[in-house]
Image 1 (cartoon, helix red, strand yellow):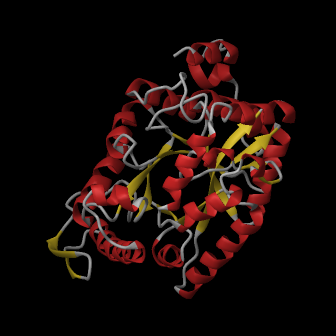
Image 2 (cartoon, rainbow, N blue to C red):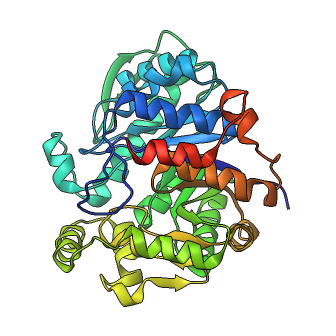
Length: 378
């Protein structure tokens, strides 16, 4: 089995040692985000997801700030098809991809929280957002290949649209996308290069992959597949589960109820599937072998984590790979320390060159325990 691509996550809404209210939060300062990005780059992560949302820093500005301090890592940045038009989007993409010398990946985001979209001036219903995204991408792809475009669609209308400067990658940076509804699967099948799913149990992930693959085949297309997961890996299984318990140890029942009520009002099928795994109950958090849904008690979006020792985590990744997954977008709390720990403990087990902190971080002697003490106090 070939080694999978491993991406990390940039916490642009802040980082923490405890989920929920805590005194250990880390603000998403540019200095801290750079530290995470540079560390992931040097450790050998292939990519980094920069999230989008009302509580996040602007992903395009953040990615731009990381251009001069990274060398190899690719950045997966949101292309918001419900906010803004394809012409300005093409210009942004071409500009950043050139600056990154071809290290830009695009995360197509048609939807999200309807209340957040309304605050941005977007009022389309759920399925309409995907119809609009289809039109957007039709126009955007033509612009990225140098065409001058006239288009009169239901949602997108442009006349004489043109992108004057090409991206570094021809014809355009790869398109990633995640969504669990029928409308989302149709969009993936027709438009994108890689389909991402949140970390559901393998059987459910296999069903989604099979469905998207079959829909894509009807268009004469094939896609790559990825899974978005948190990770809690420790040298022993007991240590890993103790860390999972500690991560949610400061959550009150009121915290959980408020978060779950917020997710219940959303029209996201993927969010509903995440919530259904645990139903907001602390006693229903183990949803598969080494698969824990505790993050989803109070965090929207990806709500599951692989929990275990390095061998167990590597085995679970291999199970997803057997379904056709070749990319994993991972994260863990706090993101700086967990990126180092995962690379040290798991990379050698999944076909990646063993990482030494000496070579990865400074070129000199490096002590992970000292780093943990330093960043925990920050």
